[in-house]
Length: 468
Picture (tube, rainbow, N blue to C red):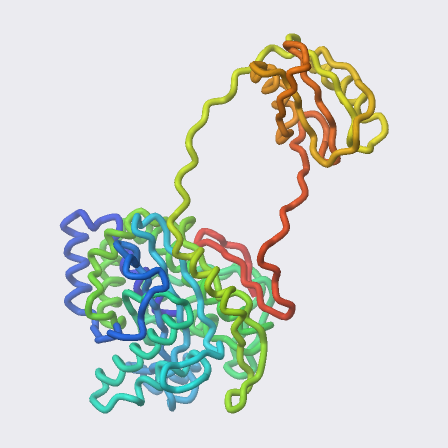
């Protein structure tokens, strides 16, 4: 999780100055000091959309690794980082999709306990893929870490059907340092929680977290309802980090900017092909309200031999639809329209028919319309209908628009048996009164929630509502 906050925080800190000499200098500082790894595999990393993938769009895998590298014994104790053995499991994994126009960024969390197929290793928890790849490689530490990254990417690509273009990871020390540089991160906790294992305690309500408290907050596992609470905490913390970095306190403070970028350079590892300046340029227009956070949908609790409690995947079609929507081209802007011409209410004659099933509705509505200046009268009952309709003669669009302004959402239809300047308002079950939009029934969802599955709603980086 630290990773996401780290890379984006460092990048975002220069977004508004990339065109200046200072921005150029900051990027060069990061480029000169950042660690690099051969993370992108040459096989097992393809896109279901075919060879046309990417263009300028980007899928980046962000990983927080449980490495205690650089921590003193005192810091290990202070930050409750746990057993130093097996430090190559990935604590946090997020896919970031950035469209070609750089208008937004979508973060998708992959919970560590997802039970997935790991190429060459059968099935296991997702957070073991990195360590499996690490152990597969005979070589020095850098080579083994690159092997871990490649196998994790292959696992995520097979799961999502997406090509992973870039990779970035961070360790615990880098996360701790960054939160201190930005002066902590504001979060709002819905209810007080306690972790009996680490001793972490968080009161309910808004609070600023930094240092050990920040790390405990994003890594807490005990005292929460589910691992999805932990994922939500990570997302909310990253959002708060981004809001801090985009604030005027940071953007107008060159010293703080330089500290952030230097911290990125010393604690983040990127793939060999990721150009920080290009990434900063592409994301130049992204704002908190355009940064969304989601989690893989449809996961359910389960057990697996040798693994204990796991999160089982939904039907493959659920994942296919989810990632297809994630990477779909942004919807084109709706064409601008001019308001339809209208007439004075006194020029409009209205006959009100009652198909709503509510006794007296036609007479009441006719009286209300008369008070509003229309020539309105009740025409009695009509065949029961669910939909409120305004009928008008061909060419009487302005007349119909005048009445439609009083019944927003009413359906329009043509009836050339009507006299010019006359309209018929047939009240349906959706009629809510003059001046009120019709209350159409909600459309049925095409993706019902699987019983027992977790639902983690989408939120943006601008959302400051409370979480567990």
